Length: 288
Image (cartoon, rainbow, N blue to C red; front, side, top):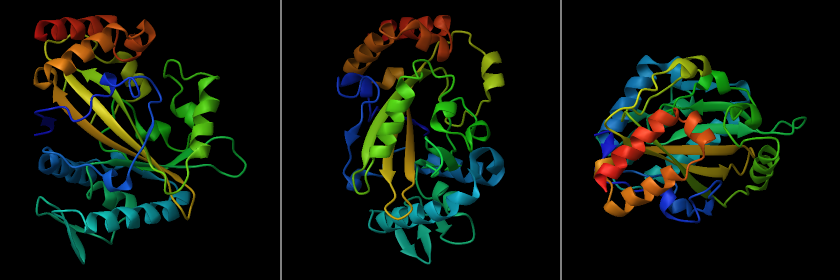
């Protein structure tokens, strides 16, 4: 079950999280999140690492230290998490044993959690954090290969409203993240497919199918941010959940409908086009 029968996160429902950046403090005890889609998602993650490694995994040399540091933090937390057992290997709640050696730490992490992981580092001679490593198995219509080694403003180059005024504020936010003070935010999209793995280059995105569809899914990315205490790198964790709109509560459907009706045209264009957006609104109206 890659889709959930409920929506654990609905950021558009809370005024504190409805608009970017919507960042809140996070208790590290809640850093990693597991849900009813765990077994199926983890099997899919194993498959992607085995069969599409070049698409979902990329690192630069500078990522080695931060990746090892992140690996140790995740392993230590999972060691005390119900359903996990560490004894040479890590045995997951689905019974699969994951080796703790023999591969890059980020590739191992891809098999250990439902979260994807991105590592960003700010070189001494640069003004922005740069993406230096990632295990990104569930991208939402973007390509890891096109983003690797690029600074924040280039990563978000085509995102509406991510302009010269917003980019410095985002960078100041990254600079201000402190070790031991984790943060969490969430964003949301309405898709016409429950598919989690959607890598798409910018060229392919311009040509993708934008035809309206009958069925829609709320896709939410729960994003956590921490600064590693030793390397100083920033880690961006991404937990993706997908829920069919008919499985949302009535309150969540009404809230989503309002949020979509309030979406600026530039954002609707970026997310798939206005006809696509209008079809999702019509489908939601039929449900409420």
